[in-house]
Length: 467
Image (cartoon, rainbow, N blue to C red; front, top):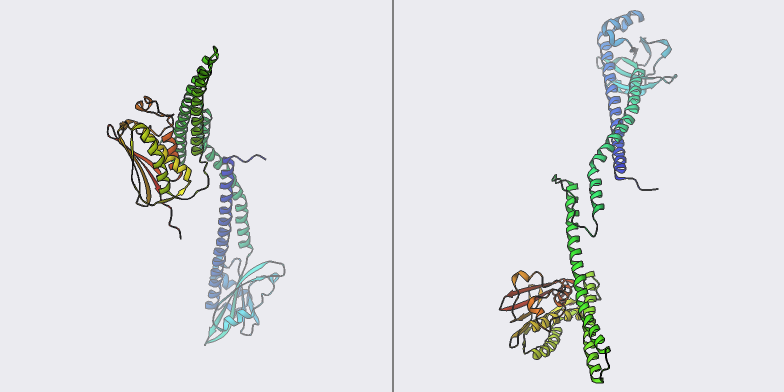
């Protein structure tokens, strides 16, 4: 069975809640009406009993007494009856049809009468009819002289309540039906924007992410949803642009060494060569193969870092890593006439992967050594500050144009000065370094002044002290 549409579910929920509300209101209103009718009936009976007590028609004959009561009570005596009892409970006068028989005088009514209190009771007759009765004592000289009992059949009240219940049984389902129809129409209108957004989203493809879902400016939930989706589309478009550029740059970087490799092999095969010439071609080809291999490894590493693939993390002491990078970097610096100096190394520990952190720091040192001219200096520092470990690599190279600072961490981005150098890499070093730092919960910042050098700073959260 397919799931119900949202508008259908909204209608069902709305109707169910409304049904529960109407049932509660109907029960309460029925109870309130029954209570109100009972109160009015009791007040009327008590009035009749008091009139009989105050006027005392019991001394007359039955017919004269009934006539006197009709004259005293008027229309109020139409459907009521009165009985008079002596203190022992013996029936005296009564003005009620004989078919009703004699209503009993309950022990509770006698007890209340001795205390001068009226008693209200509902009595069920043999024919299942119910009668509401009030028993009121007549006190003379501090003693009960007579008991006055006034009653009224509950048939009219029961009929009124039944008619009201029938009305509710008709109006509640009718109200639910109308509410369900109205709720479905309202849900359909309210969700029309969602249908429009769905149609717009279906037209958006990976080849064309420039379309946006219209925002009406009402600042309601659907507008916020449209703004959220548009923000997601902006990020997707940016990601797709970066992916296409990354793919094109990767293809370009791979094509160059492969073209050189193919050309060298083709030239070597055009004619007979000496052993030395073949060895020279093979050596050149091996260099290009190593370059392609390094590029493939860097691309694989960057892809894993971007996808969040991480290994097991442990507590890492950064000081040995800094010393190892300094030792290897010093050898690279001597080959290019650059001086690498360790300005300081405070003890600091972080949570991470030692090899990845070594790779990030080594990329920064290698980058600084490559871009610093002969006779320049590169300075490596490890410090602790504000609960973080700071690894700083500062050089005296040409610096970076402020307009280019936002691009240097993108894959395959090499500034013009770097491209002019024979030792320039594929432009993945800084991208890999930043991805490693971010994966460790840190940040990689750069401070640079054109002509005065650059300073790259890795900031990593310190590991908690062992217990």
